Length: 431
Ligand SMILES: NC(=O)C1=CN([C@@H]2O[C@H](COP(=O)(O)OP(=O)(O)OC[C@H]3O[C@@H](n4cnc5c(N)ncnc54)[C@H](O)[C@@H]3O)[C@@H](O)[C@H]2O)C=CC1
Ligand SMILES: O=C(O)[C@H]1O[C@H](OP(=O)(O)OP(=O)(O)OC[C@H]2O[C@@H](n3ccc(=O)[nH]c3=O)[C@H](O)[C@@H]2O)[C@H](O)[C@@H](O)[C@@H]1O
Image 1 (cartoon, rainbow, N blue to C red):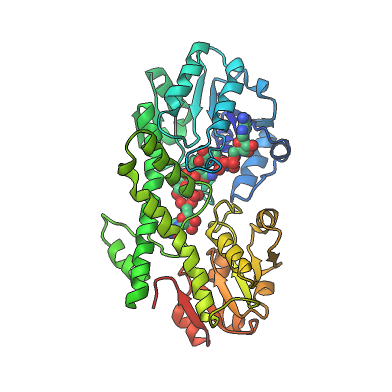
Image 2 (image 1 turned 90 degrees about the vertical axis):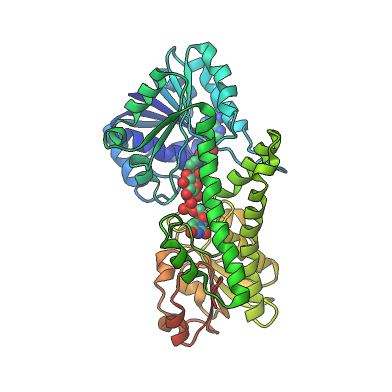
């Protein structure tokens, strides 16, 4: 099948490459010439495991090409819209400028019977409005939200947990079945529904995940004043299959280009719909989450004798999660910036996110390696749980630092091992 993917960021680039690897003929379109230049040369413009291989493979087979010229999509039967929906400046709602512009740019190039498939995360009601623009051309709209996780994006796209279609016709459903034939034939659950439900499934899923994380972080806050251990608590409640252990890792909280902005946009949309009270709890979820960043800074202050001023602090991690170079709303980067703002001599390191962090925060000092960041540090703050940080040897690390103080912002180090090597260990929600 011939298809286009409009918007080649974290979602669109992976989607385009994955669709090509499933045998479709794909053209990826973006308004960013630098991104397209890299992709057209078979290079990933960001870090995502497995993406470079997929790009090279499909670039060589001729199944995948990239362009900034929207007119090149005219032959396609299916058009995925995967542009960004960031938080609106100065507000909480989603900025739909890019989605609207992408759909408007497509209109003159849609052949009758083409299917436009919305993938971006949007406020409920958006598809209904966009369909009014698309249907007069003889094309049709479907809404097909995406659930991939960065760091596992390729696998999640090719082997999703479930597929959701918001459609208005059986024909649209059949086209989507053909698009996802491999997964459909493999028995992946497919939920076929209307536009509003499809849009809501996406925001509800992210709101639930954010709630789960903030729930366990609220437990961490209680553990901190009672001497309990939130990691044990999570293990214990997680054994109950109705609760489940996944997404119960207490720490510095959630970040990224999706969870934070999606819960804010969802709440803003509920308010527009006159149902603000239904999602008022998401404000608490957001606040609990942001308090955890401050908690790391407060712990550093407390353990460094009341001030971080002119204290040398190694910050390990800048990306919002491991296996990603994404620093959008990153708790790790926020902690580094907050410590720096308090006058600490921060030396930050991340295996993949330093370049992005440097562009956003040139005032921070970045190290070339974890060892370089640790050298002569008076405190070590682990805020992104890359495996190279999880596997640090407390005895070897002790030889690098000026003072053996570690703040484990992701609760991934073994307290006994670190204490055994002479370190003062502080986790979040751990005694
Ligand atoms: N990043 C992720 O893991 C996931 C993202 N999503 C959703 O997917 C959407 C995209 O997210 P990301 O890929 O992370 O954003 P991104 O910011 O990485 O990529 C968006 C891309 O769209 C391009 N763009 C903007 N306007 C355009 C236009 N008119 N025509 C063509 N290209 C245009 C931008 O240049 C950029 O490359 C958002 O709605 C997000 O919530 C959904 C699931 C997973
Ligand atoms: O809409 C999206 O873009 C995506 O958002 C999240 O995916 P992602 O942001 O890539 O990363 P997650 O693995 O969900 O992690 C989000 C944040 O929560 C944090 N987290 C996660 C799990 C946990 O137990 N504790 C915790 O603090 C992570 O460190 C990270 O900062 C969802 O998991 C995806 O299903 C969704 O498609």
